[in-house]
Length: 397
Image (cartoon, rainbow, N blue to C red):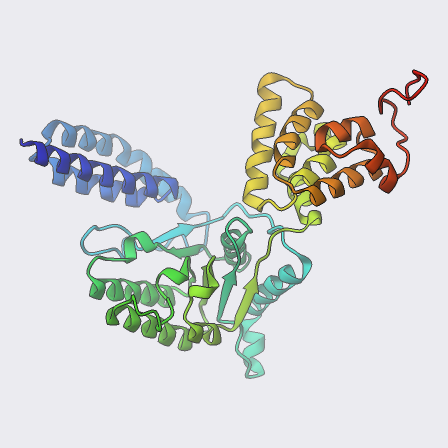
């Protein structure tokens, strides 16, 4: 085998492994086995030992996975449908949708009250669709979720689906987007038809990637026709299904698409109240141990996305558990790292709020935020907590 053949073979292995990891991460176990079977056939000639190892793995897991499939079928009303008809890309044989089946339930997303009320309204309309029909009123058939990354768009879509008793199907752009543009259109139509047939909740994630402004001169005619096809699908979407879309870049989405969706759900960066609620939720069973410093942690995470909050809190819990450290010290250390990202005004506001909350002494707040004690005292008044430092005359305050 020549050098270039070896390089090409390695690249193929990397691509196949990446596809396998993606399917495994979504717990699409049937699809994992389908891909493994394909790899056995693909590498049998070039890498017979490798292919045989995969084949042995398939044989040993076949019985166990079949039993697990039976259990899953009994756990959700939609799970007993055969997944053999899921639309796949003809070339790669990779499924065109990912499935989130939150059969064990899902906590309501942490969102501002107004946005949560909009989402509850969509859920109620779907649950009472027949009641609306008697009055000649259609329920919300489509909604577009707009906002920066990490603010809860996908989680909200999953919660909506869970509340109306269905799994969430997510259009997998990595599979749908083909190098042959005509095939991309075919893949999209296959997904739309499949979702309508099964009365599904379908999420078009990163809609800006496939529904760009048609005025964009960098796009060829085929992509513009793709946008037109999506617009037509949204127009005729049936009442029996719910079509959701999500974007981090609303400025890239074709203007005509905004008019087609029944509802626009705007997700913004979380406010302080939501951040604190997120901290308490993500602390879980450790919330009581961290209770004295929860406000400090929440205030230091001001401006973070909910996904960043979860990541920070989880890291904090690991640190405290593994090192058996005082939670207050762990939080102080983490807060100090986040405070460095705040500007002068935000630091001063944090310092004053901490002083008013009687969480820490002025001296510790000064050490944490870099805000002078005199400034803190000026805006928050004297500290009732001892340990502010040495006063004139050598006495401790």
